[in-house]
Length: 275
Image (tube, rainbow, N blue to C red; front, side, top):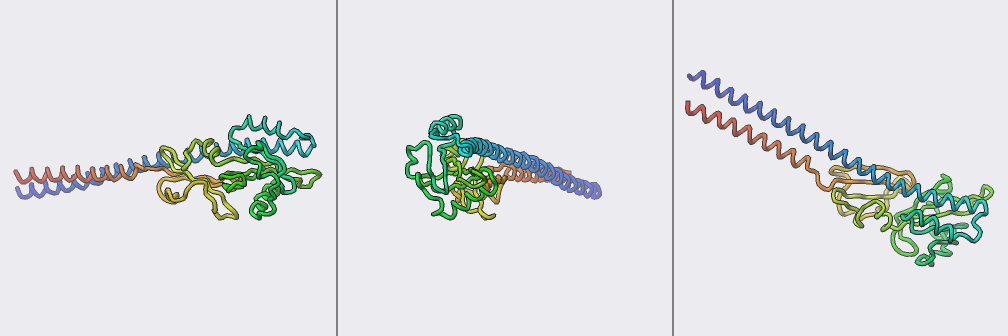
């Protein structure tokens, strides 16, 4: 009888250990699956936001290259306002178009609300010169920002170089205000959606120094997050899942596994005492 009881106790412990192992492996597998789904969700979202920004860049590039070509071939004449108006009608995410000659803003459309930028000399601000020269050296559109706009508010400035006889004449530029930019991405003013936190930052010489949204909402170095780099303007796009249920549910299943295993083990021991 004693041998049978010892064998039954051994069996009870063996069942307990095996149940612990099985339930914890299942909990871990469930966690890995959910964590993988969450990572894919965040990576898909950062790609989506990156594609929307890329669309804005392409539209801006189309506008500025058209303006640059017309200036380079002396086709603009006195029709800047008319052409700029037509281009803006086709691109609702762009707020204004400018011409910059010899680092001085000479034209802007619409003029209303932007009057104070006419005659603005970029040479008085070294940071603007550096960003403008990046556009010239790459011979393509380059964005500066987010920055405080001369006409008020926060926004981005995209500049495209204009050459005449292989000499830098100036730039065709687009202005995108923060509100319009955020709206185009489908985000709130605080840079959030129902599921995610967002951050868009601009780098200068490899050092992040300007963010579009407040930095104290969350840390993008922890949690379920993804990051993408866009070379036009040196933008870094970050997305973070607001609430991860993988860890919480993983621990819940793990504890449930312990509890069930203990209940089964305790029930087996009670049955032994009745023998």
